[in-house]
Picture: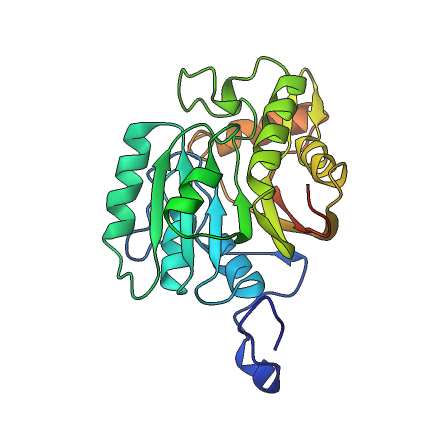
Length: 264
């Protein structure tokens, strides 16, 4: 058994649900229990379910600095992991807190806090709740300015330039992963965008932020996604535009997995 998960390798054939390929083709999102697709921009529950199953053990602590609708904490709770989620907007955090509380908790603990992940005092909260370190950090930041979440200048989606977005995200990475246990894992879910008639390789820019901070890149996973809410009613229009021009329609996002091998 690995030190970072609960997989019993003597019975490895029993874990057929765990994906080990780098291409994740998932037909539909899990909308069971408290999960909802109503919050624009949340990722499908299968992403945290897969990552937490692979890289954490029961009673480990998981940190999500972009809580949103609470998807990661719901999955952590279902898997018997403890989790702390940070959310910039108080009303979004409260909605997530109620959603998470509607799920059976078992022996796990779920903490929902409001604050700016770039500079939130995690050490103080960790001391209050007897959290020594986190064993996994899962980041699902805004894909820069693709979706408008709030009017707050602290919102990464409101960064005026790519450089500022990356600087803000770097601050989040440093503020959160300093509390990640050495030799444990973190992941970021991100996609590219199209602007000014060219692809902005947002995913690889974000990947580089981790590499510059000494993390080992363990996986580049490519996950399919269907139509976004904004494009679901205009599939034909986008296909027409693509055929009439020189671009392709984005149908994928990245999941970069890293291992922390040195203290920040």
